[in-house]
Amino acid sequence: MEDARGRDIWARRSLFGSDGVRIWLLVLTFLVFVMVIVGGMTRLTDSGLSITEWKPVVGAVPPLSQSAWQDEFERYRATPQYGELNRGMSLGEFKRIYWWEWGHRQLGRFIGLVYIVGLVWAGVTRRVSAGQWLWLLAGGLLLGLQGLVGWIMVASGLRPGMIAVAPVKLALHLSLASIFFAFLIGTHAGWGGAEPEKRGRAGRTFAICLALLALFQIALGGLVAGHDAGMTYNTWPLMDGRFVPAGLMTMQPAWHNFTDNITTVQFDHRIGGYVLAVLVLLYALWASAGGRLTREIGALLFLVLLQVGLGITAILLVVPLHVAITHQAVALLLFGLMVRHAARPSIS
Image (cartoon, rainbow, N blue to C red; front, side):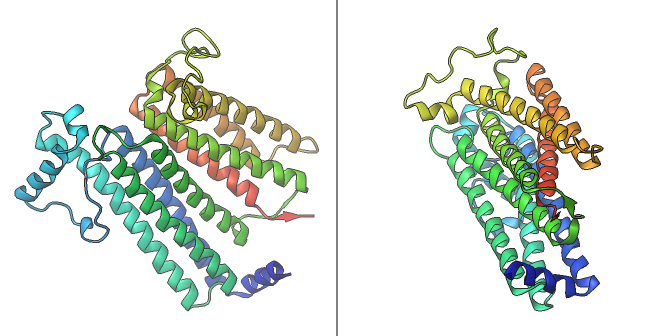
């Protein structure tokens, strides 16, 4: 009853008001998509540890003088990553990795600013109901948590003996970004951004399960990236001549294998991709049994097949930068489309 009342309040808002909120959500969705891609580039270029301090406000200002650059470089030279991987790096080379991390952080700050301004605007001008505003506030808290986890992730790579961020924390950071991305898309679709679709409870449940599986696959991809697991077993369809490779589940305790065993991490990501592709195909066949295939489901099929192809290509070519970042971008597009499809209002 309360949900129906909320939808009625939303429907009574002015056309400008409801459209304005939806446009705001779309702008944020685009910014988060770019943010994840920039984050991927930051990881793939090993730039994430170039800024060794977390200063949410004053950290927005980059070094403005030669001495400031030198001070920043000296702080980086004190990190284990510099000592193990980048010893002898010039100041010019340091600047290149610094700007990736700085850009990633500034984009995060900008997204936070856009969200806060939009949230306040939607509340003050009563573009949304009280319940909807609280829902948006929860999304803002999720965004803040994402920023905090980002710093915790960076801090994990600055500890003695570490030359990169902890893979589990990288996967968590990527997963939270994806969940916030899904929050924006799902809210937009549910608040009038997508046309209602005729489907039963089973169809909606199937669509939700696909989206959840895609999110899990993204988390596995974060572990693969964190361990550079794509640099190993660069054959397909077999891994070192075997479908089930040697070295699987060899760590003790056993649960460590799912987060720290490079063989298991890559194997899980491969199997997850196969399972997701098969389920999307089955869903498409089931959804189109009574009529024609919709463009949205056709797009899901295309993207999942493209994603599998990109994953195989990345493995065979030992993860070239352009293939890896395209693989990440398509993963987010596929996940976003799944969320939109699952969140689309249903009609009887």
